[in-house]
Length: 482
Image (tube, rainbow, N blue to C red; front, side):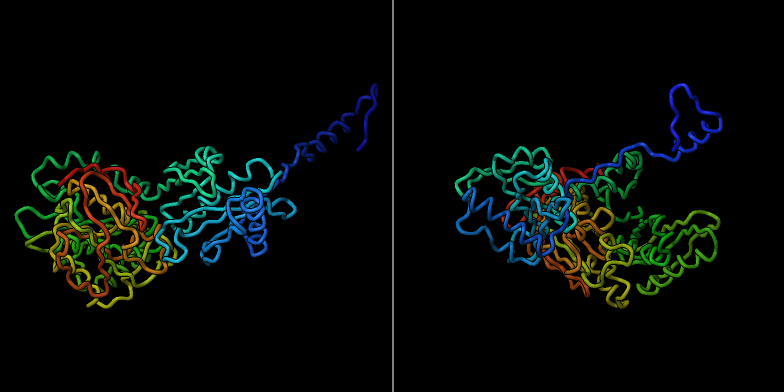
């Protein structure tokens, strides 16, 4: 590039050239590369982490005699995260795993052996802790605990951890802490919390919101008849992405609602919105296939073209003894009946379990009638709010709280606890009754007693060590007791 000396001003052409060149030059400094990053450890990094542990916890601090290796290191489910420097050096690490190395994963994980090499960049330890929290939630944990030396408790507290007690390990004072996982409460709040205020005006009319004793139910008894009506809409995004499956689910969720009321289905009505007839045909195909699978006719409905994708279905059923959601009482056992067969719906892993599309009509009908044949005190089908949110709604309608024994909940092997407790599980029903009350055969479904209704509000999770943790702090919908 030409330079200009003082007293020799550039010509117009030279100024234009300079302007063009300046526009092509970026004078900003390139961002400095990070001094380290966190990743899941390979075998070499695991060994490096263990060397750091040995140096810190055995040789330096004397917390362990000879070695700090234990059963968690032998558990194939254990995950080690490490911080690597720019040259690949392992600067620190932490491990996390199910709380009991010899038992099934029930969604209770612990973090341990957090260590950072002397001279490592500031913030390495907190970054490893934050990464461990995220990884535990990814693994489906609903409880994540750690026991930390008192001198590090403030760091954990600053990252959002809560103290749960004190203990002494290796002659040193430690604090027991837990990372609050709000997945269950967030789902319930997002799907159900506005309902109380939104629907308040309907309860004033005779028979409104199901009438006395049936507020908050899956279906509504039609006054003066033995008919139960239910209505559900499918998320428009799901109709757009997977129209056949949306049609199938439009039937499934409505029949689940009737089933939870103990009603035998009579027929269905559908309302379909679509951009054109070709797209509507795909939604209708799913509706027709599901209608035939359960043996329940589509009686009629409405179809609109030239509009965004949408689907809602209404179901009609009959029973002389509808089962309320609000029939539970403190002291009742909580049971879950669920079809654990099938797998995650393609494109909906972790959110929608498909247990119905491969079942026979006889199997579907047997599971659909289990509530009617059992005649429990209270029932609800597990739907948008997930297992815990649905239990919270049943407890709210019953004027009490609930405890759920996490390890006793029937669960497919391919679903983590976190996913199973928050997903739409296909066909699953929560029922309550006095201890020891009989339960009818559920066909392809599995039934287990997994909790109890208790005085108070909200839902707590009970863990294998006998402790409980809050899952839902109070009412789910705000509709109140039935």
